[in-house]
Structure formats: C-alpha cells, structure tokens
Image: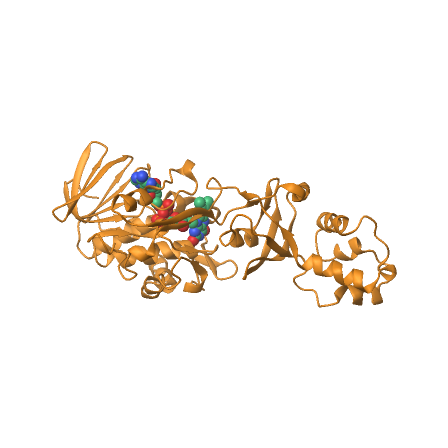
Length: 395
Ligand code: FDA
C-alpha cells in the first residue's frame, strides 16, 4: 500500500467487511483512499465469523430478510450488488465454498481467504491502510472533512463511516458510528443487541437445568416464526431459532416455542388409540431428547397415567401447550454475546442508493452501523458488501 499523504479523495473509518469493500471499489475507480481502523488488523469479525469459515452470503438474501425502520431501504443496494456478484468475486479469487444449509455459503478453507481477497481487491497505489490508531476528532468545513487520528491529521472530500455496531466490545467494536451521526445532527434508531441468546428467570429458570439440550422447534414472536434448532443454556435459550427470533423480540414479549413442529392435529388422541398403555414422556421422547421430554411432561402434569386412561380433552390441552410453550425471557445476553446490533443510523437520514447523508454532503454511513440488520446466515455480510459497494461507486 502507498506511503502516507495527508490529502485523499476519500477517508473510510473502519476496515471491516463494509469498509474494505468500499475501499476496493473506490480505489478501482481511481480514487485515493485512506482506510483507517483502530484495530491491529483489518476484518477481525470476518476472521472469527462462521466458526472461522465465514458464512459470507446467503443465496436467499432478499430484502424481506432484513430488519429496519424502513423495510424498503435496503432494496436498492441489495439489488445493485447482490449475493451472486459477491460469489463471482469469490470464484474469481479461486476460493472454494459450499452451501451448508438454508442457502448459507461458507468457505471450504478459512475466513482468512475472504479478508485476503478484499485486501487484494484494493489497488496498492490507490488505497492506504492505517491501523492501530484511535480517531481523536472529525471536522467539516469548506466542503472538506478533516480527521485527527493518532498523531496524524488528514483531509478528504468525502468521509465514509464503516465502524459497525457495538456487538462484541472486547473485539474493539464501538458505537462510534452513532457518535459521528449525532455530531452531524443525524438521528439514530435506538441500538439493541440482536442475534443474541435470551435469558430466563422466574419460573422458567428451571429450564436452565436442560443446559446443552437442543431440539428442532418453531420459535415465534408476534407474527414472525423461525423453524430451526433451539438450545437450552445455563442462562436461558439459544440456538439458531432463538438467535433469529431475538432480533424481533422486545422486553416483555413472550417467545412461543412449538416443540411439535411436525405433529398432526390430534396427534396425542391418535397415539392414545394406537398405544393406550404408553405414557406421555415415553411418547414425547420419540420426538424430543428424553431430558427435555421429561422436563416438559413434569410441567404439564405431576403424575403421568397411560394415555388410554387420559381424557381426550386433557390430551388436546397437552398437545396445545407443547405446540405453544410460552417463555417470557427476562433479557438477553447483551452486546457481549450479540452477533449483530439492530438499530443504528436512521435510514431516513441516508440515500438508499449511495448511503450518503441527506443533510451532510459527502458523508456516508455503511454496514452494520446503519439501521439495517439481516437474519442469521450470511445476510449481515451481504449487507456490508452491498452497502460498501453502493458508497464505493460514488465517493
Ligand atoms: P465490522 O464490525 O466488521 O467492522 C467495523 C470496523 O471498524 C472494525 O474493523 C473495527 O475495528 C473498526 N472500528 C470500530 N470502532 C472504531 C473506531 N472508533 N475507530 C476506528 N475503527 C473502529 N455475519 C454474517 O453474515 N455471517 C457470519 O458468519 C457472521 N458471523 C459472525 C460471528 C460473530 C462472532 C460475530 C460477532 C458476528 C458475525 N456476523 C456474521 C456479523 C458480521 O460480522 C457483521 O455484521 C459485519 O462484520 C459488519 O460489517 P461492518 O464492516 O459493518 O462492521
């Protein structure tokens, strides 16, 4: 990368997925770019993502699978640079990949390949990477942005904020993007941890004894439902179904779990006719891990009689409860465990085409710092690539 100069066309703060993509695209357009990060290396979240294999996109990355106060905002960027564009880049770099499940694409090898690819896409003579120094101040006057960082001062015609959200602070994640937005008078939708395990208290605390047990379920919150695995933890509930639903969950909401996602209506009545001597825990244990079955049955009834001795109305009520088990989480495991942050710089303040602030010419926000949050499964990186690409076209 080039030697230090103090004036650039563009300064990008944050060398994560969005910032690297933006730098590559702008650099390839011939713009001089300074990419600044306070971390000691770029793309740290990419490196730890997907268990070290980076779930870099999803084949079904459609706008409906993203949350935002404006559900249309992400459409433009996601359609102009989509999952197939990113896959084409991965293929061009000879990186082998596979679909794991539900359209989720992972590297066969290592997430390091994705960071190396993005770095490789940054033209050496156009993009300067500066690591390990904190930002001290940002100013804007006479159509130029001035940034003081470490012991250096630099200026540029445009400034891109790509510093992500505060999830996993011990990795250096910060709410810096929100501070910059507020400094320039832009609204921020209240940030909250998302894709995060939920915690249980009160009566539900007993379920913590099932720590380590997982089962395929349908998890619901309001009108949203996910059919994936749920996992009991020593603090509460986790697993993909819970992480997904956590993004829609607000304090006080119940999370409804269907422990019988594949059972027909009146399944227990049919079972009573076919196996009248069987007891509920044994029957349920054919569908769920036995420890979970025992715990649920213990809650349904103190004493279990053979199904043949149970009234139909009782069986219907048990089936209804097993299909609609309500937990009221008392919180979440917070930013320390949240895979992403929902909320962020209000989309009402930004152009959906370029990510430029409407009120402040040539100031851009991209990636997770913006109020756009994807489902679990490669969606959040796709947003980083798409929004980074959109800004990279114009900065
Ligand atoms: P990102 O957080 O990646 O980058 C921001 C950069 O800004 C960082 O390099 C940081 O050091 C820097 N920065 C922050 N504050 C700064 C400051 N004040 N000054 C200077 N620099 C600053 N998503 C997905 O799609 N597939 C997956 O497999 C996973 N897996 C995954 C695992 C784990 C454990 C986590 C925590 C998250 C994921 N994600 C994921 C989510 C994904 O990592 C996330 O959405 C993107 O990395 C967001 O990209 P950004 O570039 O917006 O921010």
